[in-house]
Length: 307
Image (cartoon, rainbow, N blue to C red; front, side, top):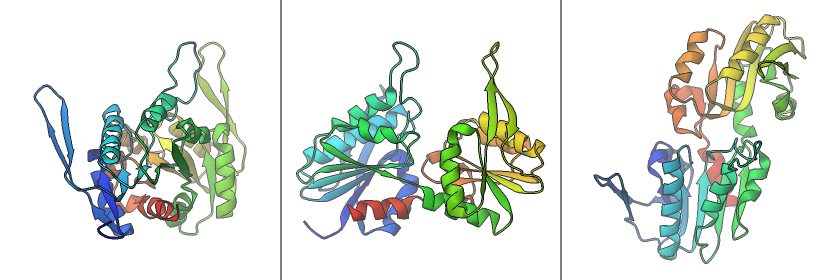
């Protein structure tokens, strides 16, 4: 091996996170040549020598094209003779499609895990690092030829909550009872009271309606935690419930700031959320000011280094 440093190869979508990874670990930056053809096909070439190297492939999968780039580059790295490959996925797309509800539904989380599992294993092994999965079981959807590691983001979330609330009296809230276990665990670490909203499904419309809050939030701030913020419908519904229950201010934090389209503008325009914060695991986190997000780089680089 030319030196003791890992070679870091990054997908195009995750270029924003590459400087943080380079700063957090002892990496050599691996170049990738890219271009697009008029018919829409993509050309990619490893413009670095990976033979005998320990390679880290950094790339989450917010879109279908991102899935393909991780797969294509992973295959290229393995076939080019890398000693080992660590695939770091800060965001695992399709994580909410982890089971079938209706007959014939595609369990996309599993089919995509199988896609990554089809990357040929390297001589010293191929590992996959996943960050704050929507469902723990997704880690075990991958084939046995690759070793998977689920890296929990609790240290980052608690750090961000403490920074945002700065010692003020607050309650850590959930959007619904389904996330109560996660919130209870984080609240215990933060030494604060947990809360969640009760919901009931309307038999006629099928819609969920808030029926109450389980904790006394009067005169206190509420920080709502969820694993991801997408359009924010459930988040705003919960925020209204906490405000109606007497909360002075409501904030939101998420492991993954997905925020498609104009959803962030809509959340801000609602006037119901004061602070929106989270990690930089998803490219859309870059819509927020730099000080509003905490980086996953140190945590993930440390996980790679321990294994």
